[in-house]
Length: 305
Image 1: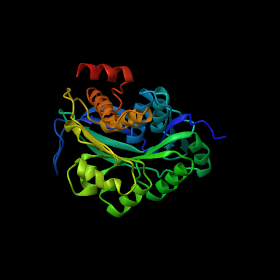
Image 2 (image 1 turned 90 degrees about the vertical axis):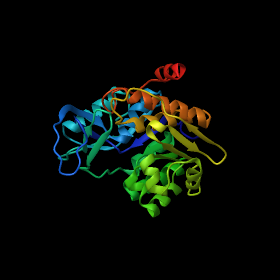
Image 3 (image 1 turned 45 degrees about the vertical axis):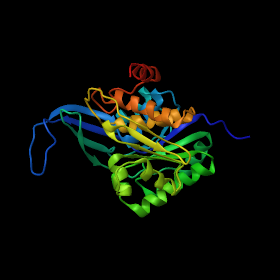
Image 4 (image 1 turned 90 degrees about the horizontal axis):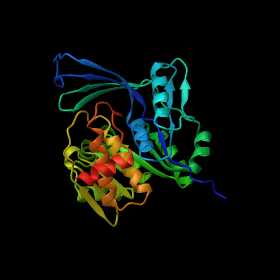
């Protein structure tokens, strides 16, 4: 008898602590600006996704490494505050947790410096014990060989694989094609999609990526909205007009809401509508997790629209 799939999402890696600074404008080359300290905030794209997905009602576990420092403590405590299972997080001694520096301008747009301080290492025996209980493995595939091992294990245990493709990964065409062969749901932001395809986001261009393996390709376009394609359907959703305070983590919240709507079996257009609304709400408050909505808040927002 197979084990019950009581973990909706296993969120792999993608954790850090964000040093967030407000600036009057994003500096250009050799330009100095004055900054205002916002604080050290737990962040990271996969971690933001995990917290957002948990708020939306999914059962989420984090598989990650952190250092035995203040940053690692903040990461674990914040996961626990959002109801994310931290039992699979390994605390590594004498290592600093990954961090980023985020510069935030008055429009809510940002520039980010990523400082990776460790390379994630996981026991494949532990992963193999968890995956039979997992519905979706979600990650950002920055470590190619590790991703391929995890994706193969996931599929061996009948879990789907969802990834978020950053521009630096999308630009490596041969590597990206290999990653997509092992992916079920591939998400891109506009820059990542353009880096991967050389084209602006469109239904026609997105459909071409289905040939490499995913059954679903999703593209976020910021204020312009989003689109998604499957073999037998496509959908586009315009953006929502909201007061923008901070766009950090908006894409992660979108992805969490899209996966949530996917797991409950919503039609493709409704998945986009739900995800757009969740992301729109998230940008109205400062911080990558300043506002991670619950389903009732998303429903109220959609009712107002």
